[in-house]
Image 1 (cartoon, one colour):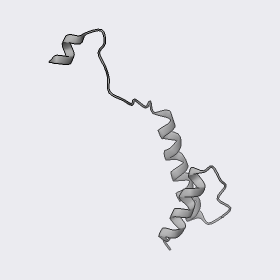
Image 2: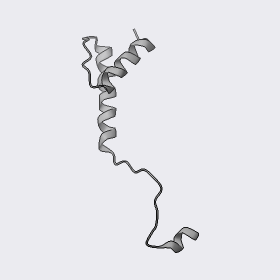
Image 3: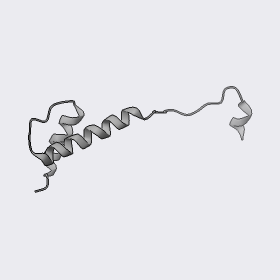
Image 4: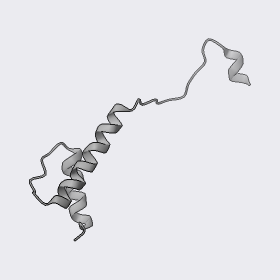
Length: 63
C-alpha cells in the first residue's frame, strides 16, 4: 500500500522539524529516512548566494 499524500506531508513535516516519526511502518520509515538523508546532503553542499562583483577589475564589468 502506498502512502497517502496526507501521510507523506505529515512525515515530511516531522523530518524537516527534527521530530521523531513514532511509527514502525517500514514504508513510512523509508520515506522519513529518505527525506532526512536529502536534508543532510543539502547541508554538506556549499551555498553561494548573491551576485559576484569584481571590485578589483572594473573593466570586466563593462564587457
